[in-house]
Image (cartoon, rainbow, N blue to C red):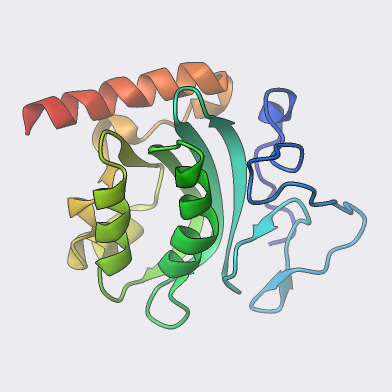
Length: 190
């Protein structure tokens, strides 16, 4: 687990610890000290704690003018026991939303499990983005199936053109534009 690192190449475009509007502003990273764990397995110190003991994130990019953010996830998403969606919503999403972000791109290739509960926080999040949207990229099939079991697919766009294995080859703006086109097509159809 300690070898799974958040995506680093966009640090030249954005660093959440240097962004005064970021929930992680001022965080100092010690890359020599592994102290955070998921199920007693140490994880890379670059991951950010959002309140959950099993799910960590990295705020990879935010553009306040265009109102979008890219968040990478790592670990087990557990709404049933630890209410991870509540931590994400209250500690990260609400903070970004206050600063004008209404489009959220969630990258989930390092989410290894999902345990659902109810969809209240997802519904609240969806209702609050108004002219925006929530898109999930590269979540594993079994996570997607569990999301469907809990009606989370009513609030988050995923699958099809949103599975992009080449997202790391793009700049944040290119990535956002591609996601915006895919999500825009889906919204126009409804």
